[in-house]
Image (cartoon, rainbow, N blue to C red; front, side, top):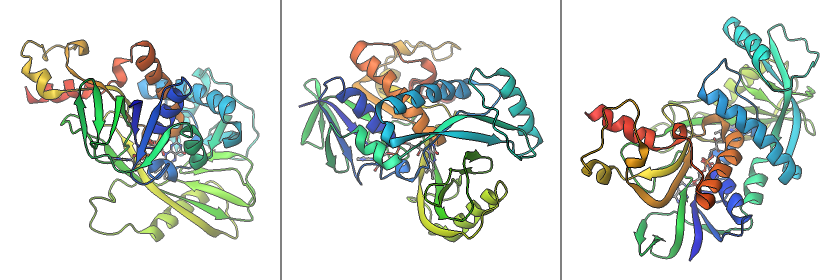
Length: 364
Ligand SMILES: Cc1cc2nc3c(=O)[nH]c(=O)nc-3n(C[C@H](O)[C@H](O)[C@H](O)COP(=O)(O)OP(=O)(O)OC[C@H]3O[C@@H](n4cnc5c(N)ncnc54)[C@H](O)[C@@H]3O)c2cc1C
């Protein structure tokens, strides 16, 4: 029996595996396709804060950004590169937002000289080797390439596909079908496409405007990513139009820099997984049937008490990172580790129970 089974070997699952194996826990990781085969393998893995005025999402990404840069630098310096980042306003509205951001942020800003006409924010960001990082993080866990179809709780342990057992299960399945189906858990799969191109154009900085453009490495730039809400690999009838995706990426990138003598090297495509309030999901799962059967819980309140709900024992989810998976995952995995091993509370704002509460309220 393992201490923990992690389902899904993207950046979320691998970060959790890392946090727990470094605390001497025995961890088994399952992935139906392989390590970093989902959204994580497609990511440009730019590490950037969220350049907005205010809000909970901006705050959690800010904290995760500060934490993750230090985490990657300290633990995986060979798979992480600190790079100067220039975020450029797209229009008048974002010009205003960036001006406000610069006045109010506590991040250290750089005085990088540049020729962009619009407002810019310059600071130190980073780029992760997405595939290498996921593999390195889960290397001390046992890896099994298999799709998990069933989870049964029996005799104080989870039995996985009738073969493996673990005291605790963490579901890190991204935008794919959930293994435990609860009606209040709904995630949006947002298809993304990015490309690596060879070009004679040299670029020193990580540029973020209509798309992100990496600094040049051996004459190659990574450009990404599109946000396509119409295509889904599991439900769309028409195949994905890769030529159109490439054209969109090059068109958007060329609004920021002049790309010369371009040769396409590789396409990367995958699904991001987003929640309906854009905040990540981290924590235990409510058993809706049992909680509703309880009868004496007040769902009409504005201040729900999530502690009254009934939860699947020792079963957690980590998901909904949207376009910030590589920024959020190390931070969320640390919070989950502190909860599982030391009982530290997880903020209500990221608890999956918030969606249960909203789902019940809608039904009333
Ligand atoms: C094109 C693109 C560019 C991006 N760029 C950036 C970026 O620059 N910076 C950034 O921070 N983020 C970026 N992202 C977002 C980031 O990639 C995601 O937030 C992150 O990958 C989510 O990680 P995850 O582990 O939740 O999901 P995934 O990486 O999708 O992992 C889920 C895994 O679970 C497995 N799985 C699912 N169900 C089962 C099952 N039943 N049994 C076994 N295995 C299962 C899947 O095979 C998959 O490997 C980008 C995403 C895309 C698509």
